[in-house]
Image (tube, rainbow over the protein chains, first blue to last red):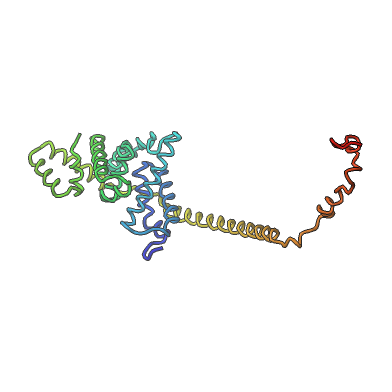
Length: 166
Length: 141
C-alpha cells in the first residue's frame, strides 16, 4: 500500500458519511444509501492495496459508490422489480408535519425528488459535479466519455431540475 | 434547447475563446442572462444542500461489516490453504506411485510370454488334423 494511504477503518470513520451522502443523492433513500456505503467500503477494503492516489480520495470513493449504484441499476433493469430510485416512497418522500419541518428540509426533499426524476446518466453527472465537486475532466476520465458529453449531461440535468423545481 | 455553454461557464469549464464569445452573447441577450441566472440558482441550491444525515450508528455498522469481511476472507483463506495442503499431499502420493521403478512392480504370474510360448504348436504340419482331411492343393497321396 503506498505511503499515506489511509487504513480502511480510517476511511469508514472519516468518509463513511460522505459515502452515505453520495449514495443517498444517487439512490434517493436511506436503505439503499446505507447498502451503497457498506458495499463501497468493502470494495475499498479489498482494493486499498492497489489504490494509487491520482485525484482526491473522496473523488475515488465517489467513483466506487457510483459504480455500485450503476451496477445495481443495470442489474435491476435486466430483472425488473422495483427500480432503484424509482419507488413511490422515494419520489414522494413522506414529509414531516408542517410545523416541524424546516423550509430547508422541505427544499432538500424537493430537490432530492427532482434528482430522482433525472435519467441516471444526468443524475450521476450532476451529483459528481455539484455534490462531490469533481471537475468535468475528472468525470469524463471516470466515465470514459468526452468532456463535451459531460458538459452536455450536466447542463441537461440542471435544466431539467430547473423545470422540475419551478 | 438551452445553451450548453451556460453550465460550463458557471463551472469555469469554458476555454478563454468560448468564454469571451458567451460573455458577448450574454451582454446582447437578456433571455440568455435570465437563463444563466436560473441555472446558477439550481447549481447553488445543489451545492448548498446539507449532506443527508446518516444513521447515528453508520460508522459502527461499516466497521463491523469490514471486520466481518476480514474474518470471512481469513476463514476462506485458511480453508483454501488446508485443501491445498491435502491436494498437494495426494498429488505427491500419486506421483510417487507413478515413478516407482518397473522392477519394483508386482510380477504377474504366469508371465504373458511364458503363457504364449506354452501354446505355440510344436507339431509338424503333417500331424495337423485339418491338413489330413483336406490336403494342400497339389499334394497328391
